[in-house]
Figure 1 (cartoon, each protein chain N blue to C red):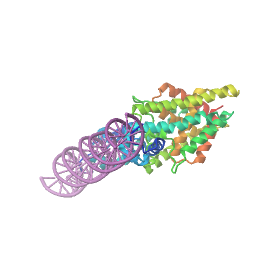
Figure 2: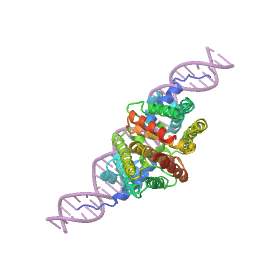
Figure 3: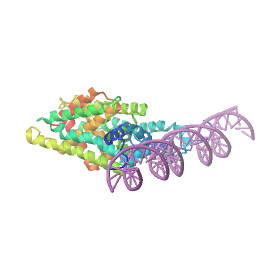
Length: 195
Length: 195
DNA sequence: TAAATATTGTGCGAAATGGTATAAAATGCG
DNA sequence: CGCATTTTATACCATTTCGCACAATATTTA
């Protein structure tokens, strides 16, 4: 392709955008914040990624990639549902508490406040929730066939409860909860919900 | 007290502030938005309630009053823990889905995104979480002494799981979930967590 | 009635914001 | 080489934003 070569790396730029948005949310993030964090100047950003809402949605999708991978790997890793969900939550806690201070879940902590002003972000959030429900349910259904002791388990509803667990981990981390507290909570959730 | 009498009603003004903040969050709400919704002009607002952050915190506290009342009434209303929590969640769903479109929980949907920029809001959110945990735990402890069948229940952790339920109701409502779906989820949560 | 006090409301101003026009720069292709 | 093309980077613009100064207004107290 001809033309002046791009100076930025798309992954790194998205990563930078994700960082600011994760910290400040959409509304509180200025284009100057983005320019600094993405190491690009404003016109280049606009040219490559669109307006602020577009960038946010792309950064959010980038954030959700990790989740998708975890659903397809960590959650299927072992023979035991309990072990798999424990590993999954442990991994999530690592992400949520991976900075100082902890920033929790980008999706559940920053998207909801914007949802009423940005219909597309609302759709993104709704799809994300549906996707997690579906991923969890799938693993639970599989468990019901393999492990015979889960007779009273309702995969559809239990999956939603497990997502509630994931969400509370994300919220509580951002509010300042300690890693240890979250791990104990996640363990108890798995033990209580998957029976 | 002498001087020109206030034209506004403090409750109504706070109610107006709560409405906009609930819809848009702190950062996306302008002082003009507030002026319109509180039916006051900007200097009067500033004089009576302080700056935008102050107003938000007061509106949030106002929102949380309802919760406090519910913790002290609805959650203690009957002899059955299950009935009380079911009633509590039903009431919460009513609040979360009481507008068109649903706005979910003001605290859990709008505060988290601001928390890293406003330490005092972070403290408010943390206190709120602690308060709900404590209120739920108290009811569970009481149930353990009254109803002899809850031997394996760990009140501290179960309370956190019930708050996770409350939080997911608030988030899912805002993302567009239907009332019926949320009620079914809440029922299943109570049934699964309090055993 | 007059002074003191508290609130209202118009309107200002400095700063920040989202977005873009425009020209320079860097590459590939003929 | 020279042209087409794409990206960069400076600079700018219109708008919005927060916060406040200031004068007008309404009430209580002396």
